[in-house]
Image (cartoon, rainbow, N blue to C red; front, side):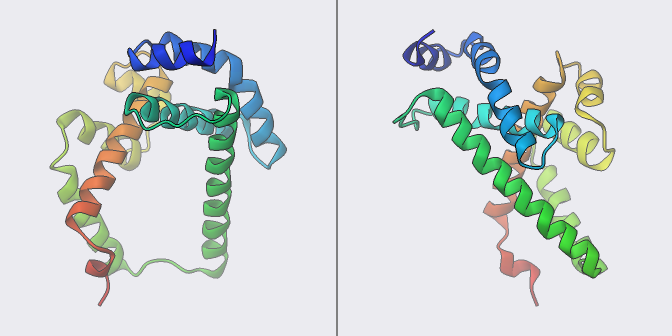
Length: 179
């Protein structure tokens, strides 16, 4: 299947294009992540996120493809993995130094998130609550919500989290949390 055909299928909403991209590019991303201190599970998450980025850009007519799709996906996955490694490094440094948010600040942020959660659809509220507060795995989340599989649950969770992030950014500024 040509790159043009893949883009055409995605624009029409045909998920066969995703299956094709998954089969064609998954191993490449797994190798990248595992060569760079990651696990296969982390690689699966990064690849899923890269596919979501690609899918949304194509569907939103925001994709300017100057290379092969495989090169684009590799680049997105590489950038996502770098961000994840940076996040891990920051978190491990905070844990080692014992730095954490004061209780009042943590509670303030929880209240903001809870307010914004109320503005989401019932489905999104349930997905995010089950995942973040009840700490269900993607497999368990898929079962609980009646989704086809863990990948569907991950995609739904990503979309709901993106919607929540937009609400928080729309209604609050970073300065709202500082004295």
